[in-house]
Image 1 (cartoon, protein in one colour):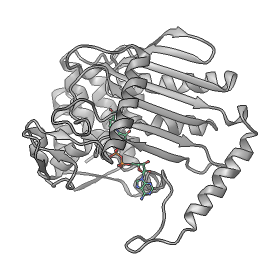
Image 2 (cartoon, protein in one colour):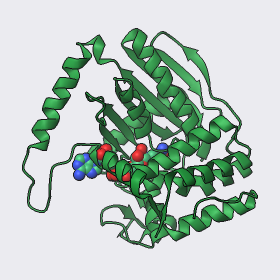
Image 3 (cartoon, helix red, strand yellow):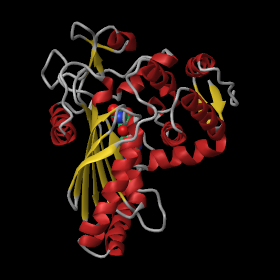
Image 4 (cartoon, helix red, strand yellow):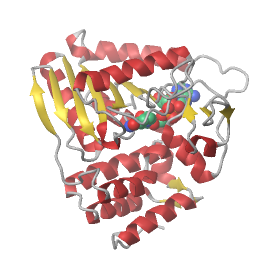
Length: 344
Ligand code: NAD
């Protein structure tokens, strides 16, 4: 395992994306998102994606120079076309637009179609919480591949369909943050397990014949993921699909990586009661939860979002751990674009 400085890693990723044809602005946004995903501990959505995005650019499936645009709008809603550029660029724009609309109308709801991979969607709700609002986001593919089996099903019917919510806190504290796939594991985490050569926990994946397995290679040989929490995760995955794709009109036939769709909602607490009263209640709730004594086998009760906040603080200071295999793949991509790397 290597340890990389976040700023140097960002410099390198930015240089690769720029060499691959991205505008400065797009390269800056996608790089920030990938490195921040590593900082929060979600390596599955971090720089491990650089070689994949570069390949998508080369294959003409990701347009690194495009700008997403609004195609339909009301005072509190908008529909966007992600323009098949980095999904992080469309997602950031959607979050900012939802915030602006919520400032005016109390609620802002923005959906986007034709996005490429939308990354760690917790970032979009953290952005909304940083503006003092409650944020919600979902993302799903407008077409296949469907790698997640519906509850009780033997074939895939959904993607990993993540959902994120963030609640703002007083005095600049990191928000309460819910951000996870509705599958038992995010697909990127299977890639991380593969890069590390590690097995996955039981109850996570099925092999191509629908048999339970912990060998991550079985998934990549045509296997499936299971929804989390059985029928409960499955039902939530269906809702994510319909919110993201159904509202944005981003459905496509067949498999298409760039057909990701997104929904973002911003709620201004001020429209309901003074914001400070809301954040006071968030603190009361947080303190009640933090004061619960730990159960056997646990050292403390964490708030949703605390793992990410702690990881961000630690990794900003001590560096980002990166498997050799991931770094080698980034080096290979850099060589292909004639980029000399500064980290390592
Ligand atoms: P996960 O299982 O690691 O769960 C993370 C969530 O659980 C966070 O909200 C975290 O704060 C909370 N949490 C973790 N431990 C906790 C504890 N002990 N106490 C309280 N809360 C705790 O998430 P995941 O399903 O592996 O998803 C990882 C990432 O993948 C997410 O950032 C998600 O947005 C991203 N993702 C993106 C896509 C896409 O297409 N863009 C698809 C799937 C997943």
